[in-house]
Image 1 (cartoon, one colour):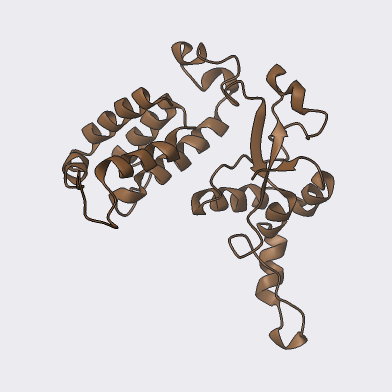
Image 2: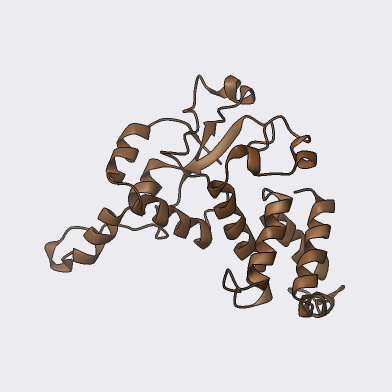
Length: 224
């Protein structure tokens, strides 16, 4: 979403939850050293939601308001919750149903916004989020002398890489990167707890999670 759309979404969310406006007004405009300002907080909110479709963000707010989704604990968790719900909605809808006509006109490919690249979890991270890895970690014998297998979220498990979008804009990256495949790959941008949980659920649905790591090994360049 654009900054203008973010402002419109924020107004919509505050309409659903009026006490949000009071919370935002309570953020200091000119805080003392070490305290974030209202502008800085809202800028961070926008940074979290900028890759979220505007209409899906509004739909996520509606779902929180009508009880279809559980409200987050604390206003500071709202952006992450909206982002998680919107991503679920996006994956559950056909491409043609993701955005209204007026929004689609902004980009030839809304998925990558004509950049040609999609950020996805690397094979190492996908393996760390697999049911098999969690089982191995749970059954690990600390007296064996072998290191305990790491699960997603622990050190050296959070990695992502760039893939080429299937759209024409991705053609220039296809020689050196794998092409994004929603059946084998899962998009990620922040690698936060919400995205880690999405990856765990994604891997749980796979019959053979280890096959993903083997097939994708050494494909794509890691994001910096």
